[in-house]
Image 1 (cartoon, helix red, strand yellow):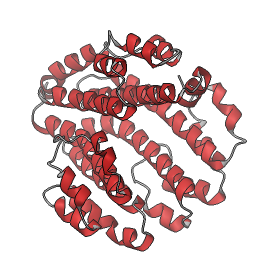
Image 2 (cartoon, one colour):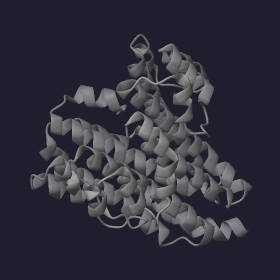
Image 3 (cartoon, one colour):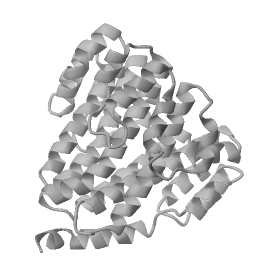
Image 4 (cartoon, one colour):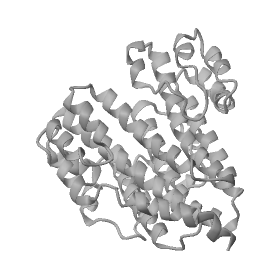
Length: 348
């Protein structure tokens, strides 16, 4: 009865909002649009109508993407306004991911001195007050860290500071921010009780699998570090892909071993054709497969016992996936990529 009282209204609210999701037919239409103006027309009758206005006004892609990010954050804030207690704490913790990405973006702009890209950053407070201008003007990484003193991100950056000093790369700081975020998120989930923790674990575990694949992709593209150092930047808590399996694939320069784990699940047959490619393509493919598995798991959670936090986590997982796909479609159309390439790359 207690869980029913806690989640009944929230469950009804989220299911009503899910009815406004873009369906497969709409995604296919967006992917098949001849140009951005057609995308704008298709978005006009959706929750993304603001993007339609920006596209029609000729706004640059970075401002369109920024508006999309604000729509995503607005969804969290709207649901948060209806939540209380531990549930509200969890939704706030989930929303902190956008703060983490904001800090990561600021670090890149600070490092590259790309102040002209400042308008791509959301200046307004998301979860914590982050001094955008002061960070961009900081004379050193130590000053950046001190500027984040009132936030949880200071300690995260301190954890990655030594690796940053040794490597001279931002990567250790970015990974430290993500590791700290998921550690605190798991702690918040643990406060909800066994039933809620179990409902959250599967979806969050797949998201961590995806993050770890993305981490290995970054390592393959931009650096060549030993397997022992690679293990240190992987997140714990993945559902399907153990750290050892990931490190074995990283070390062998062949990611096909990872598919042995995923073969226990129904996978789209069209994906099997890519396994002769290089490791980066293989890892990218596994990331796409995991994204599909995540969507299936989220929809399964929505069809299960409704009175747990799983409904909220599934809702936000689906909304993030939808925005991610839309962001890729917008980027593809802006670059003039053919429909087949956009659809093939993003599993649409």
